[in-house]
Length: 234
Image 1 (spheres, rainbow, N blue to C red):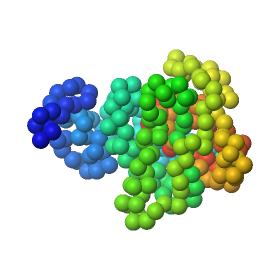
Image 2: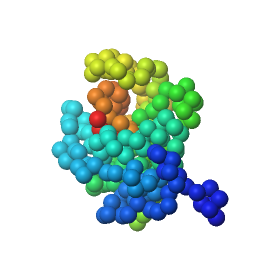
Image 3: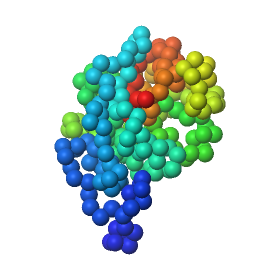
């Protein structure tokens, strides 16, 4: 009835969705396809790009996708146009990547990259948290049991405002985010970080300056290891 009164439209081009995009073995993308017409919904053939993770000392990086095509469009619509309905299908794609690489490995905490408080207030949501908010449900549906890990959205704090990284080179990006993150003192005192294996989650990985700074902050607070899982890599 709702669709009859308010016919769904493609979030990219605005055309009415008269039919579903045909499922061609893209099971993990089926939820995302429902928001786009068949002309706009196109996937890169080489979707998963990180069979061999990049390594930064104790840090590993896994990305679900290249930052291009419909994934790039969807991330932009989510972050800058407030299309929060895309968070769940994008999060499901990210969850499949997490399970593929770390589903059978020791993980204690899943931590989203935080936003500075005023940016959070302005945007109204942290896209990195929205991507992982249903991970426990996805895990239970897949495994039939509760996960051993916890989602910890408040452990890491972005205490310093930083300029947009757009237009900065690699060194400028690194300097821009230096010292931007801290771990809550109460969590340090409670040993919630010490000795833990952490998966850090973000939406886009460009030069890695933000993610690596956050990882180093967690490692300095006593984490045993930190791995990065992102939806898309430039």
